[in-house]
Length: 406
Image 1: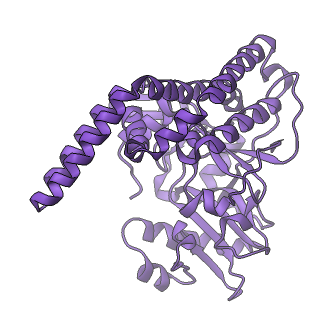
Image 2: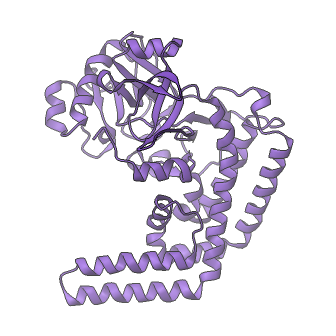
Image 3: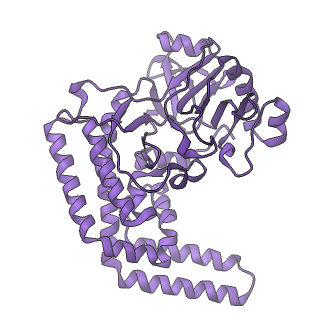
């Protein structure tokens, strides 16, 4: 696994990533203000050191491939009961849903996830996992397909948005063909702290056995050969971009603080996601104002009393006035957000070269190649976890393609 140094924030992983949520790197500025912005810059620089020809990796950040599996599975031996269990991310909720038997699964869950958990219980229990492993389901027996893509024979599976494909006659293809259950593991708990607290988890896979019925993938990112790393021209492009980001960040500390105190900031995450879904990348104060006006209009329609409607309308008027008055500063903030995403894309372009399984997006016209979902950077017990994802590619597809597993 690639290792890098990381920005040390006073927030624990559990606080920064409640309920299993992992934030996009560039969103740190809108979620944690100037501290989040500074953290994003330092993570950018440190991760780049590990994928640069002239860089030197430092040992405290781990970068893993973000496989597009679903649902998330937490499995292993429960420290209190000493029994094997399976769970979804509801394991981390206040009233944890832990399943030791098929009856537990049917009592705690409903819908398509029930069958997935029953199969997880059947196939993963014999692995004798020492500790607890966190991963994502890739396939069950019924979800594998034999398909021809661009004239080549593959075994495919689509757990969520991305379709994964392995050549039928390859060693991996033979393993996948024999397996009845596929899972990727990325994080482990090995007996320190409360397993419900995210801060007690670390990257990696705990000791476990093997089974021909289970195809297990370790999400760790392998080391790239030198000829695939950022070369001098690419390094210069990255360094120049980060220098510009740092200069702009220093001059916008006050503007960012002011924006995050405003009522408009309540809608910024929704606005960014909406523009991603629409395939747009040029976020602006005017675009945010239009989005908020539409959202507040819908909120007003849903309210029952005239007093509540008036209160919401007045809020909309205040936000519109604020965005108009500070449009130039907010445009600069969105520009900074875009620059961080652009620098991140340079890193992703190198990390994507580590993929060993072909990835496609399927639509009415067939399959088209796509990059992996992205990557996750994790740093120590007191540092944030961030996603390194090409939002214009994967996130837009994720918003717009129907899910098959629900």
